[in-house]
Amino acid sequence: MGKKGANGKPKYSQRQKQRQASYVGKGITKKDGLKVSGATASSLRKDKQFEVCFDDEEGYQPQEKQTKVDRPNADNKLTLMLHTPNSTPREAGVFTEQQRILLVGEGDFSFAMALASRRGSRNLVATSYDSLHTVKEKYPNSVATVRTLREAGVEVFGGIDCTRLGVDGAHAEVVAPEGKKLLWDRIAFNFPHVGGGTEADVDCNQKLLSAFFEACKPLLHPARGHAVVTLRNTSFYRGWNINKLAQEAGLHLHDTRPFDTDMFATYTPVRTNPAVREAPTADDGICHSYGCHRKKRDKTKDRSHDDDDGKGKEGKGAKRDKEKERAKKKRDNADDEC
Image (cartoon, rainbow, N blue to C red; front, side, top):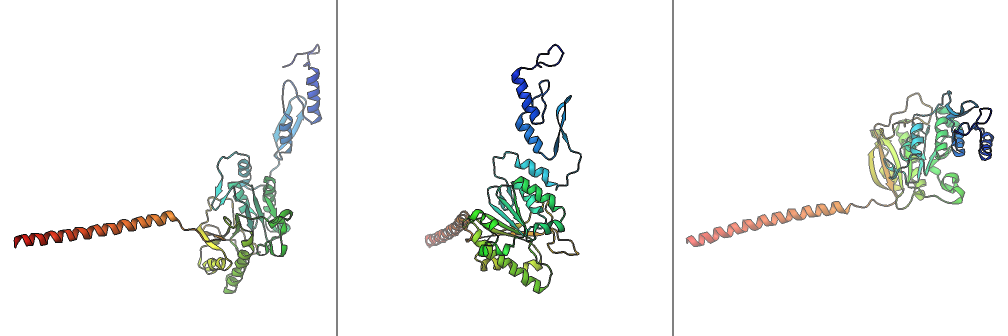
């Protein structure tokens, strides 16, 4: 508390008056020792969840807006994780914080939101086949999702055909921004489906995946890049022969694992084409990962098997030696009796 003048009001020095004038110029008042740094005021002013109230009697008061903000449930978690220091890389299934990840075939971008909530938004690009205008019409909740992703630093693009990535210079804004080709650690396509359930539809889906594998192979990092495709574990999807399609494109299976719905709890699959039926859940999904090179054999396991085999052979040899020794003793005893 500063000294008071003859009129009973606080008495400020010239330096204090100049500082208070700077606060007033920024729309912030400083009264009776209340200190608000310029950086704090600026960050609060930019925060859309707060509005600034200026009252000469009460000073600076941040208050929550009463207006309802329509955002996904993962928004708060995403914001918290992005601003929480973490000494170890965050992981989410086959994805890690250190990887450059491209998501293709997104519907309402709920998977991009779920993934960013788990591993952060760094080096993450999410794309949809539909234009963003069409996405907005199909899935009204995507408006808030896309806004949140972009505010967090995720790049979001619409109108991207994953079967033509980089083909004849297509979609350069994604694969070669500023004229520089990017190599990706993960290119992921979740639950691809062109619609329908007939044999002819199976053929269409196989062509879709073949073209996807062909397009993304040159974009994968040759040492650590993987194309990741998640399909439902049913007879219809198993009939697509995805492993054969990837092999024909020069990719090799590295890993298969169940799709962890608990890890991506805010993700809900949607149908990209208008349909009467609801989209199936991701509960029975299987995640397939394909790399540019063949998966290396685990030499540790091979050595352990060799050691086991060696011990087995050694055990059998020792048993034979004992049997020979006993037979020899019997002959010797027989000779002695004679």
